[in-house]
Every structure is written in structure tokens, then in C-alpha cells.
Image (tube, rainbow, N blue to C red; front, top):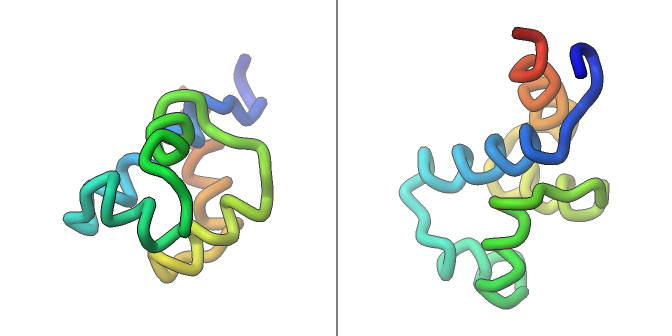
Length: 77
């Protein structure tokens, strides 16, 4: 739905951030102190947990708002 933030869009941005940084899913799991299966879930299902988005933001040196607004702009088309 236009104007509504979708979990699939967040998943896409999280995956893009990882890939653009040249990290593997295992590299990112190590940085997030979680299992690789959790990273896979974030990248396929997305997440609505602000704590996770904040962790990604910290790792990739971007604001949480930057992640969310990038996700929202995907749905604008």
C-alpha cells in the first residue's frame, strides 16, 4: 500500500546495506551477536523492532531514520 512502510522493504534495505558493505551474513551475525539464521530472517522477512534497526544503523554508520525513510521510499512507486 502506498505510503505505508512494509516489512519487505525494510528487509531489502537491510540486505542492501550488508551487501554494499561487502559483509557476509555470517560477518553481520557476528557483529550483531546473533545467529546467521536471524540475519537471514531480517533479510527476508524484515523487522519492526527498533532495537534491531538501531543496531544496523550503528554498524553501517547511518541513522535509523535513514533506514526507515529509505524503506518507505521504495514503496512510493
